[in-house]
Amino acid sequence: MLKFRYEARNYLHYPDFLVERQGRPRLLLNVRTQAYLHTRQATRAFSAAAALADALGWEYQTWSEPENVLNLNLRFLGGFRFTPHKFKELSPRLLSTCTKPVHLDTLSQITRPEALARPVIFHLLWTQGLRADLTRPLGNHTLLTRPPSA
Image 1 (cartoon, rainbow, N blue to C red):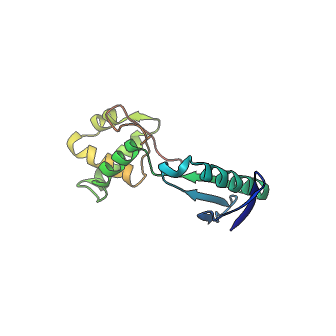
Image 2 (cartoon, rainbow, N blue to C red):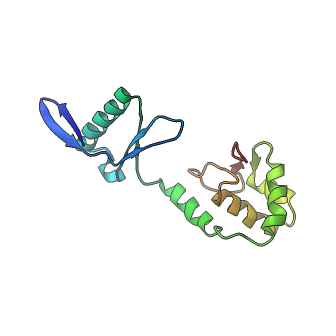
Image 3 (cartoon, one colour):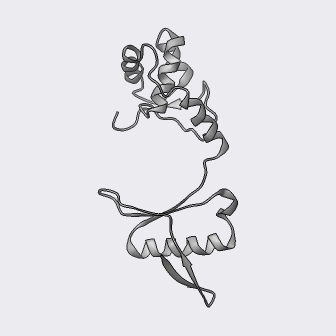
């Protein structure tokens, strides 16, 4: 419970999470819907939480529901959550091709057969073997990269 004073009044706020992270500062986190995110009450409480986190050397974040494009992309990729046909055969070839950012259509055309490559690419995106900016519409122009540890 966070007790704070604002404009000569006392307030209470319960942040949603305190996240312990190995090798990184703690993260104080609030989660609110977009509809509530910018209300006066939320702004006041989140400012107090951010100030507390800063004073303690922690990080602070406010999370809300993903934007519509992200939701659509995640729903689409969720259809590829199960390992597709020829995954073991095609995924090493796809990943070895991604030594630098590459467009989705280019990667799928390089790896034959293309019809089997795309489900493998989408499964790799779902499992984070490949990365892309999912806040933008997913399509042939989407740039794919390998995560640093892959």
